[in-house]
Image (tube, rainbow, N blue to C red; front, side):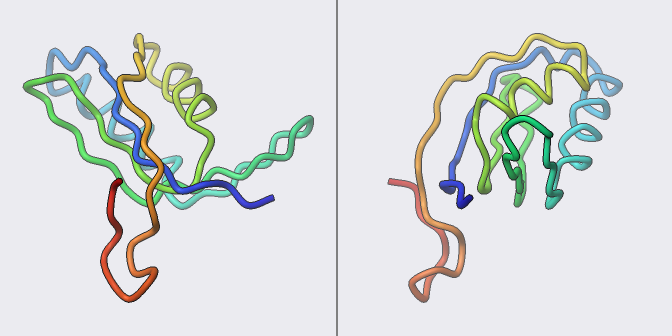
Amino acid sequence: MVLQYYYMTLRMSIDCNGCYRRIRGALLQMRGSLSLPQPERSVTELEGHQIDKRQGRVLVFGAFSPQDVAIKIRKRTNRRVEILDVAEGSPPGQDGGPGHMP
């Protein structure tokens, strides 16, 4: 099963350095990992992320299912996650250039 490449923007409460580290740790655990749940056998492959502490926004990009990633982040951080934007894009390096967002 091939997943679409997405750029997803999330809104989360990042109040302190501990919150930042917890969110970063959850994202690093998912980065480049292949998780295969039994019922649906979906593949999640995060290529990277950016965390904006001041605005409380997290940008995640890679080949994944947006809803599944938001749920995993919610479970691992015990924080409310709001999906602000999901955009389809191309992976970096495809078509001879860096990845681009439409």
